[in-house]
Amino acid sequence: MAIEVVSITDEQAEQLSQLQENHFLERKAIEVPPAKLDKTISAFANADGGELYVGILNNGDWSGFPNVEAANGHLQSLERLFPLGEGFAYTFLNHPARTGLVLQVTVRKARSIIKTASGVPFIRRGAQNLPVSTPEALKILERNKGITSFEAELVNIDLKEVTNSEVAIGFMLNVIPTADPEAWMRKQQLIQSDRPTAACVLLFSDLPQAALPKHCGVKVYRYQTTKEEGARETLAGEPLSLEGCVYNLVGLAVAKTEAIINELRVLGPEGLVGVQYPTEALHEVITNAIIHRDYSIADDVHIRIFENRVEVESPGRLPGHITPQNILSERFARNGNLVRIINKFPDPPNKDVGEGLNTAFAAMKRLSLKEPLVKESESSVLVVIRHERLASAEDLVLDYLKSNASITNPIARKLTGIESENAMKLVFYRLRDKKILERVPDLKGSKAAWRLTRKGKEHVKASKSV
Image (cartoon, rainbow, N blue to C red; front, side):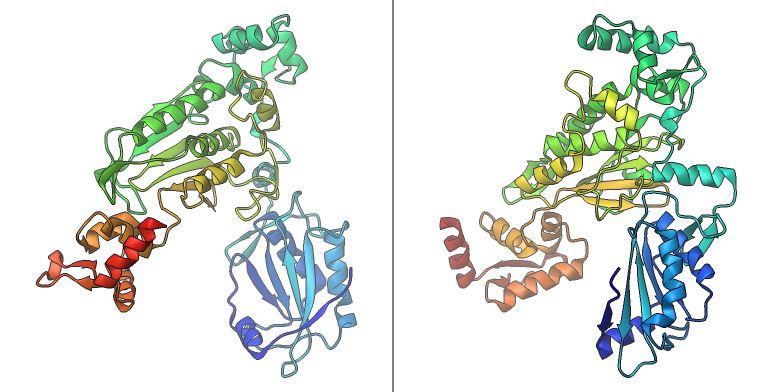
């Protein structure tokens, strides 16, 4: 691997000196033994990736390597952890007024478990490198990496629960009418040691939730608020608890979500209008949440419907090397057997295997809605489908004033999704400074409103004719 030495500016050097250690960043002195670097590199690779700077002290002072060759021991340690040369990159940083070369190591989230020279893997939590020192912790890490999957666990129920269920009989009649259900399931590795796997139960039991309680249901909530968190006082009615085999559960969850959304009304230029989310986006996000979740976690998939967004939360972190940043371009199936078999069902929910979220993003773009947000926490993945237009706040205000004489701050906040009253004022001020808006005379306090100026009316009229 070529060794690159990059000269950096005064500003960049100062920024590096002021960086604080966190979940994604650590600093070390050059005197640190290479074996001690293993812990940090392993921790980053087994978690979410990160950056290591060797040659910057805790107080921010530089004390780097006198030359590239002086870092050979540290580089050899890196190459021992990543023998194929993948998963990391390093660069030497140079500044004429600072002492020595700083080694910058960028570590990516690894597909496999990366162990130190002593054979112990570490995991990054906050600014700490914690050893994965118990069999239970190692099992969790293996599942997070996608090396093992709960779908292969054997479930202690009667085989007839999966071989003679309504789901199994319907599947066999429609897909493989000449096959015997039990023989076919054994061939597909869905039955082992005379017991069904978790994947088999999820796919072919009429009620998997009875065999795997709290591991495979879906809950749907409706909140009458736009706030970041839903609270009991804003919850409309009781949450819906949905059950059934995975194939039926996807269809039921999408249908219930759409039914609730169809009752929503939001303020538009012409008054209250129905909320529109692309069916493809809802379908793909909910499908992904159900079939790619970590079934070892005792929790449901949660669908929360707010006034201005839909949140779909799936138990478990992103598997393997997948991150929120590369989720649209990389592929990794945590539950490979489940994904493969459900694709054999008539009109499968994952028809375009591997294209789910790409389809959702494209569908949102076609409706000029902002693309979904993907967030990862310690134990779940959250996808947020927002009912927010790609248009700027200024455009939305002017669009409203095409059909209305004036606009108030509360109305504008509902239109734009801006929650802060002061932030909304800044939008009005920008339009005022362009001579497009003016305050409505004699309206103050909570009744204060804005209207189009003569120039503003000409601007809106011109935009209508385009």
